[in-house]
Length: 170
Ligand code: S3P
Image (tube, rainbow, N blue to C red; front, side, top):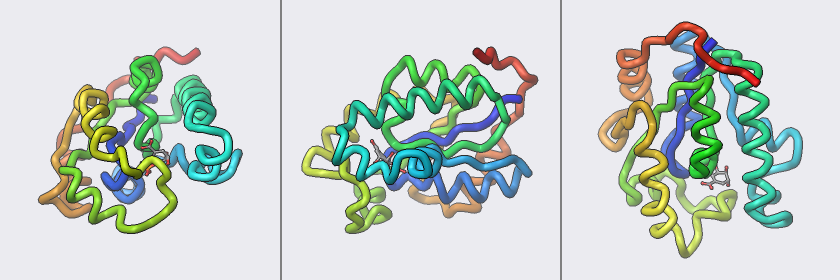
């Protein structure tokens, strides 16, 4: 069964919207950061201790797992998960992709001063600019700056027509 994956930069609201959307649609919810935290520890610690490449490899392996299972869930992805075009292509074999979009200043307000995002660093503006094309490649790019969580959920529900199981697991 095809699922729906939320993508976008740190602070976009992927986890918050994902939880509300899963309740609204009656679909299970999964957060890739939570799955990887349960297995390997918090992403911030993984990235800090083992490097970003190790974390990306784990994200890619998790996408392979999820696609093979094709559970039809609502998925919140870590902000960098769809940056690699191959991982993005793989993800969309089983998920429709919705990008939650907002200007960097809005994201900065949402993220606050938390220290659990090592890649929200001095290079954040450049990283945001570099990733725009990856997020822009989603099936729906939804501006969220002027919408609260309920409005974002309703906009996605209005847009999404769950397709037949045309995923190609394996
Ligand atoms: C990352 C975003 C984080 C987490 C990790 C790397 C990124 O998730 O996966 O720290 O590269 O943008 P959120 O998007 O939920 O903050």
